[in-house]
Length: 288
Image 1 (cartoon, rainbow, N blue to C red):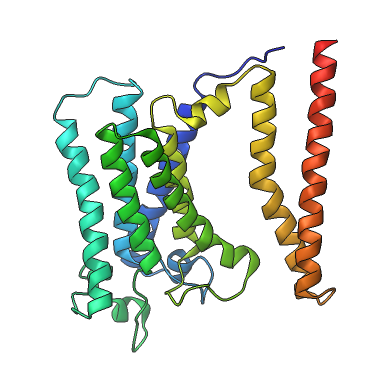
Image 2 (tube, rainbow, N blue to C red; image 1 turned 45 degrees about the vertical axis):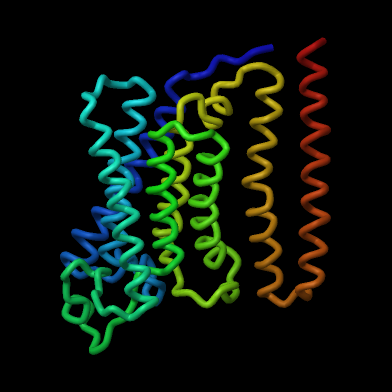
């Protein structure tokens, strides 16, 4: 049994992710730092803020991935000159993030994070120091390298590993906001919209690849495709929802951390077995 599917859905997902990334970056630059809105810079007062260099990096990423997608998904016919532009943007991401990272590690005092703006005047604080997190710089370097390797038609495994690194950086940044706790490594905390933007960037970069996993996942219409789609939803939503609910109970003092870990494992096994049983029943009814 097959289902009808919108063939433009993968393209729509890519465009939506890139539009959200570009929109957030523009709002942070123009309203957060141009007008001086602290809510836009940090979402919630007291949370880490997205610095101007981070917003600029996401703008470059969105434009570069959109250009790559248009060229390789044959949405429009682009001149050959698009390749130097694409490599320039990928190299710019790597260079800006690398220089900023080395600046903070070696104490060069270049202060690229604010792109020449005066954070003390904008924030009204006598001393302001909230640089780009090293993990954010690593995310931009991974994005630029993956984009360049994709254009060079490197092995798919290498490209997928680069996408996973970008996705992992965004997911680790979000984990602190979802589940709390101190970071595993002593690094500057990542802004919440920075973490979400990396997740959208990784999704768009993965989907922009020719014959990508996102395209195959969305456009699968046979029985095996249905199984894969449900397994994917469980793999993404199951641990997040289960972990969030268990951490809420832990914060309320209902049980110890050891009990929460045990419940987490038991609930994941229960969700997996339930999905297998539901999928088996659906496949059986389709064959009848």
